[in-house]
Amino acid sequence: MHPFDPLSLENSPIISVRDLNRTTRQLLEDAYGSIWIQGELSNVVKPRSGHLYFSLKDEFAQVRCALFKNNSGLSFDPTDGLHVIAKATVSLYEPRGDYQLIISQLIVAGEGALQQAFEKLKKKLDEAGLFDVKHKKPLPEYPKKIAVITSSTGAAIRDILTVLKRRYPIAEVCVYPTLVQGAEAAKNIAQALSLANKHAYCDVIILARGGGSLEDLWPFNEEKVALAIAQSLIPVISGVGHEPDVTIADFVADFRAATPTAAAEHATPNLADIHKNISSILNRLVYLMQRQLRTHQQHVDLLSKRLQHPGQKIKLAQEKLLRLNKILVNLMKNKLLFLNNKLANTARMLHAVSPLTTLDRGYVIVQETHSGSIVSSTKSIDVGSELTVIFKEGSAKTQVISLCNSALPTPQMQKNLE
Image 1: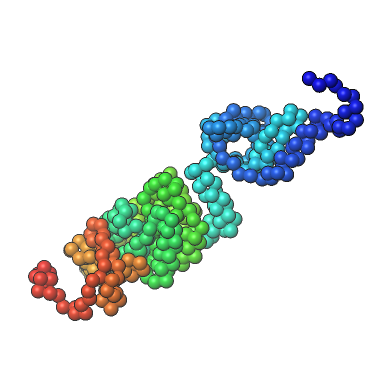
Image 2: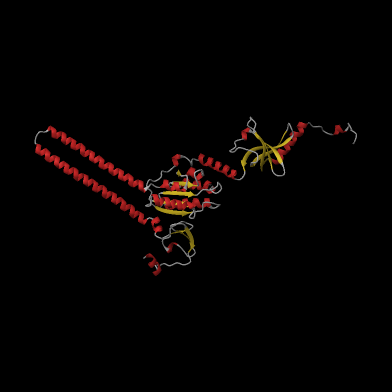
């Protein structure tokens, strides 16, 4: 050990502990600035002050952190063991000389990041007015044509077609097949919405897919899909996922259904209910007419009592009134029967030309896979074109290997038709 030399103090500056810590803090803050760091929460402390103190660690090291009250607008409850991503400033707590991170933003890693993105976009679109009720378009009460935008191979399309056939078979259905999951799904969905509006063929659009995780449903949380729904001139019903699932598309759509099946139900009236309503109206009409006739009969009876003569004339008038009453009732019944039969015949005729009935008879619907357009002639396709063939149950993709411009069926086709 070297002996102490008092003269050495004259040539060396002496600083305080406070100055050392302050200089160190400034060096750390200047060197790193703002950083993003990922780790596991540990030793989480939540004092009454509203600040949050914890350690952020990985398998090799840990660092103390502080999240102050004015930056603690968290959408989750921080607990030990939770993996998070933090935006932080590297600093030092001068009174104790403790190296620490000052946290300004804290999000859960993985699905939590998606939830953060969901909330951010939801707030943006809400402030832009896309969720405003005044922009919601009313659904048609009796749609003649219904567009369905969903996967052509999923359970959702089968459920929707089943419900439409059961409830309202007289409506025409146009399916726009699209991806509903993956990186290209949002673009596909937006294009299908745009195409349905360009065709201007349908009265209402059902946008649907089955349930899944937040990541599975993410295409329906993307801004391009939200804007496509908002720009649609045709009313859009969203039926995405199951009851607890909520997407950005649900907020923008003109009507949100809990499931694809519920979307099909809200898109259509029930034909059986319509028949019941018509029968009820007709019965009410007959009742009112009969009540009116009874009122006139009572009036005649009153006049008859007041008049003593000519009795024969009154009697003849009463008999005539009774005859007219019977004739009128018969005419009303016949007219009501005629209208009811006409309605039933019209429903049967419409059902006979429904594409769903055509599928029941063994025919198929052929669509150009990429555009979703119905193929009714070889003039609209080429050799190599990709087609989607929709059967009564399910669908298949195929490719054109040759073309025949003749519309006449082959002998084998003619035999099958017979």
